[in-house]
Image 1 (cartoon, rainbow, N blue to C red):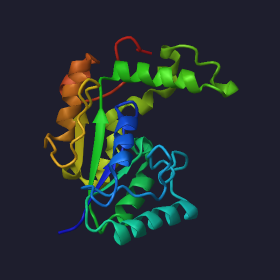
Image 2: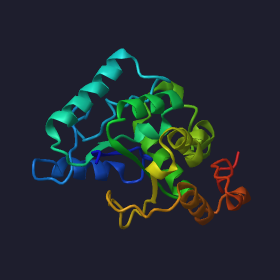
Image 3: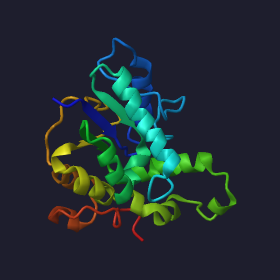
Length: 226
């Protein structure tokens, strides 16, 4: 039986920081999982392994990824492995394909948390406001302008497309994030088809009618239509 490897790919603002902090605090020889230190920043996020920029991984980035695999093989003792970075939900096809080849020795599963897109956009905009330092950001002064500039990033189906194409639907678990309760149970998938979960979430969100036909899109979210 191959060793299980969980790739937590986001989405940002779905409790990712709380989850990563908990994984960091709970790691150790007695933990029921292995949380690699390679490419992990002090907050417990593997963003250094999975940089957002670029359509492919360059040579130094691939070396870091291979170092992470070496750490897993040397120190995980067969325990389930978790790598967590919300940047992964924006990974293009070439990067996802490279990760599939790299993690071929493992039973790799993809976990993607989502939430209704209106509060997600609002939460992301608040974080953007707190971090807004560059002059090029000054044109984005309200949430509508923010959404217009970044709407593709909130299209869940688009984000999942390369993962589904490369790893297959059976390897993907889409989970609905509830800020009040969380939902961080790695070993017990609800086993819903990812697109079914996306459709249910989109219907609850109250987005465009196409959602009912199975087409998930962020482009017509109430309050942010462009």
